[in-house]
Image 1 (tube, rainbow, N blue to C red):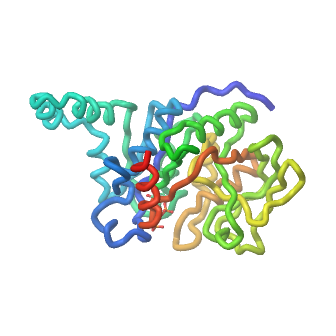
Image 2: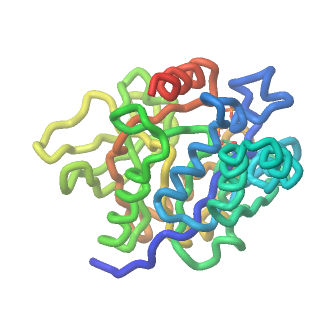
Image 3: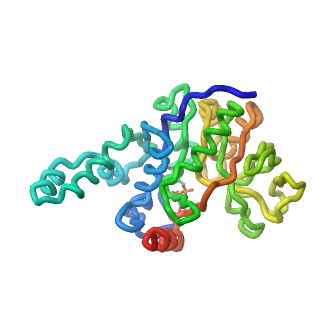
Length: 292
Ligand code: UTP
């Protein structure tokens, strides 16, 4: 099925989590605000959404994440001070951060998991497809450069072809498979997959398999890679998904239900995912960006 779809306009960035893998600093500093070079991680994630054409950014925050709201707000006193001292370039940069898109914020009242965070976006998103970008994960291209629209572009093309939702996926080795949301399916064109299963954190023996174009199977599996494009149908399934492990609403469960209803594409992530939710990941992201 081919359907003409409107360009992707809205992006949702969940950034409300506790960040327990990065305690104690996340007790008072949101992990999404930790620095990579001279910018917070979430700056690069927003840049990626804007580069892909999103003009409306909804960030899901929580009680202690006010610094994220401040970062994307105008700062007139600072702007005036910078211009008065001849630092116009710095002033322009500060203004650009706040005006590159229309920013909206919503609070997740209780940290009931990623699925619950996405559900907070329901009224704002309404009845159109939207991008979901995990705010603690940067994607860098082959040159180590962040901010490329390539991942969201690939998802948009898949959605335009099928009318269904699409998710970025990447190969992961067998010994790490049980840390991720894992997919099964068939590669139908280079880097494009028709998915048929989704399982959250499977034991290696239960991980679904992906059949490649040449008929081979990877020894490990293929996992979600922090970038998604959803049809609004995801909200109906999220609203029906009961809390699971740790009393959290699992996005993967709602995605599996949506897959059964309208199919789902997987797109090989063009680039590399850097999860900065732990100190080693943040160090690696800094290495990449500072060596550019
Ligand atoms: P994680 O899976 O890394 O969870 O969230 P977390 O709770 O933040 O971190 P750990 O595992 O305890 O260290 C992926 C993204 O989803 C957001 C996070 O802020 C992060 O950007 N998230 C997670 C929410 O917005 N709400 C939640 O309830 C959970």
